[in-house]
Length: 527
Image 1 (cartoon, one colour):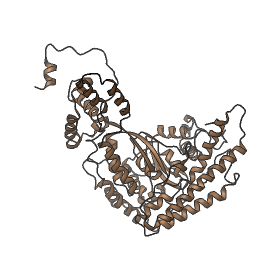
Image 2 (spheres, rainbow, N blue to C red):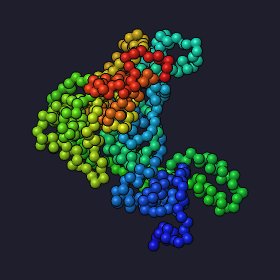
Image 3 (cartoon, rainbow, N blue to C red):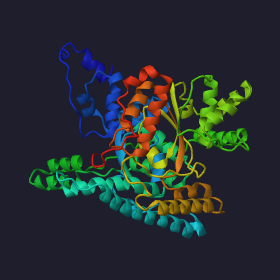
Image 4 (spheres, rainbow, N blue to C red):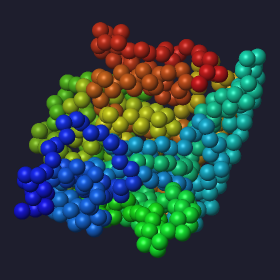
């Protein structure tokens, strides 16, 4: 009989309390806490009793058995771990946060001057000089664009008597940064913080280790190492002081206090230690890229609307095959779907089979298999605006690679001076065209991984294509939130077009949207 069974079978044991007990928990290591919570299904002990008897060694033994051998991955959902990821490129940041179960914050291009950030330089050999010149040129244009637009805004909008000068300056500077950010290259360094559970972390690390970008693979390895090595202890300095203050106590007391306060904590030494590159993802990506190229051989990219609300008339098999190919080309969903729909049933089945044949025992299906949603938007917008839309995780997102194939956006906002009115139009177009020339030269060079490395030269004003699949509640939420007057016009326009598309197809639903008409000029001093 186990200790738990003896305790619960004792005739002298006290009856269970009749009132619900609720208490917060602080100070337990993430894996120990995950083990303690998992014990609820296997033990009658309270959380306090479980934590009192669990050691990190016992937690490791338990997780090795139930997590890795039996595949009980939900246990890892219980271990939440905070990370800081600093000095990574914007390109890498987009890849890192591309998780449907992710919580975090990244540096804002609206409130911070990214000239101080520096940038990432891939291994380019002799092409490094040209790459550096292209990035430096974009940063110089970013600086000039921000300063020029700030001057134009001040000329157009005088300081109100009731507004403090520092608030006026800060508000207009944010508006100027909204314009200047179009020139930031994807190489620009940023920083972010994330709080994820260990299951998300494991899949994130595995996915990053499978990336086509060396920088992203390195970040994946650093995340795995950070989870298995001692974490930075925010209380370390205070703990040392406290240990000195209790120095008058007996030696055992002092030793125990130091152990509790200064001991190194490894946040997820067990749950992430086996994270490796995802062979399923890597092999599927290679074959699906080849399949998309074969299907669309010789086809030019047809013009498509900025926001295309797709009908739901096609069979599920057609949606699945099209969605599998979509991230591996640059065609619109509608154009790609027309070619998939023209295939015979056997050929479509072959495409779908490519998405499953390399799947391992514990691999989740590729994201493209999340199909059947009623609202599917094929969106073409600037990369900077996509970064904001990317935060909406209660939907399925499929992102295509960065390219020059779709051209670039020009920053506009009703009520704000245009680039022409600010005298900046020529400078802007010259900077974007120079960046495109540098991108093409690097892409077509013989440098190692040139096709991937060239994408770092692309500025945030370049257009990228992405698919968003969602239910009605999420479509309404995004349209309402992102159309607000305080937001960046780039995604305000997308939210407005999403609303208009739904209203046109479902007129009776339009009245339920609390929508802002983004075509109306806004008060630029309101944030």
